[in-house]
Length: 106
Image (cartoon, rainbow, N blue to C red; front, side):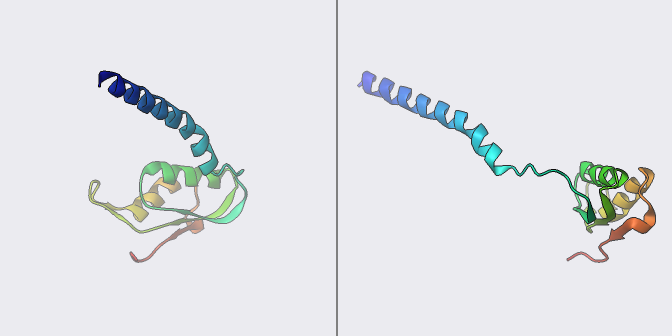
């Protein structure tokens, strides 16, 4: 009985290792790795600040003409995200006339 449990354990361990080894190649195939190209508009969805900073970085590199922000309210920070996003990108050099804010929450 113990030998059957041991064999089952070894088989499960081998299968687990195989699955872990396969996760990296599977993940690599799921990620799109296109080169960044110039565009007219980029939409920075409300959320973490890295999205805002990346949008302003793309603008400063000349890869985007207009930055669009969606509406969202952060209860944690007690602020409207679009207004905060506008403030952040303007302090990073994005011109106000190049910004568009979603007026209402969908």
